[in-house]
Image (cartoon, rainbow, N blue to C red; front, side, top):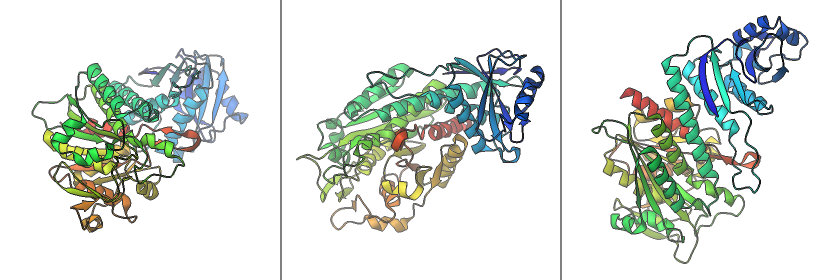
Length: 495
């Protein structure tokens, strides 16, 4: 879907459909008032007949309105004026695209970005329209023998009363890059484990590198063994698919600038290993690589933007399967950092691959490190499917990520990382054990990772509850690409 923005009069805009808003009680938005005047009160007549009440997210399609250049007019309800804020705007945008996709319209002009949303600027409204519009057109049926036809809507114009600023044009381009990054993340996440293997992820990273002039490095198991990554390698022991440690380097900033490092968990299928998961819904464990997918989507987005920043992506990737060679509960492995780990549960494998990747991250002398992982079911219990869990050893870094999450509408919640929880990882036989019991499970997982991040500013995003949806809407969400890209945009602006 192609997006553009320009100064335009709603009544003169030639398109298959022009979209304007109506508040509860029949109050027309400014763009709708202009249309109504040109149409000799045709919209007011519709409202008088109660065909459109302005109830939030309701829509009414009017074909061939006299005096209007567009072929159709779509009225969308904005709800009560006093209640129109962030969530209402998002509901309106979703309803708009849902209605447009039910028409044969190939293009549309939306007069929604001029609406006043409390606490939100023009850039925010533009970004949300682009992200939600692109998401509405996303399909993941390429593996079906008869894929569904793509949506008719190809071009969307964001009409505005005044000439858009250069900042608005920049936001539009950045938003399109983020949207495409999310689509890559969703596509990779939805692929089955027999296609999306560690080798496949490595190939995707190398393709990105060629397309956007990034530097790609893929370490094989023998390379990881030389580095002492025996914690990571303990996870891949039960699989016939070799583990990969994938690195992508984007150098958009000054050579002296320390990079921001993103570490994405890339377990392409997680059976739990010897600590086998229940069979019900185990198919969803193909999503255990969504941290890796979000990092790849983010790297594509910032490269497409040409962001003036240095960013490194590290993806430790493996399968976790049961086999005669697989790690057993009670085994003790040695991490790259030299710390020994008693593996009490082989289904707590994400932290075993991440700890070596986090140690490896130090070689890049990072400004900061953010790891992204579908790490714990405990985080889903704590926060549901609304917010990602955020942990950090640096309050200023946490504040930056929270600010980005709010602006991007990709919610995160700052969780505690107190030393009081560390003792739950004590082991009688090794430096630590890989689980801390049921109590505070997401916290103790973060505590485990924190032991490998003492040399730099670090944050951990547990996306187990936000990376995908179950049920009839099953599929990857593309989160937290909006959060990560907004954080990096903010950092580039600071530089």
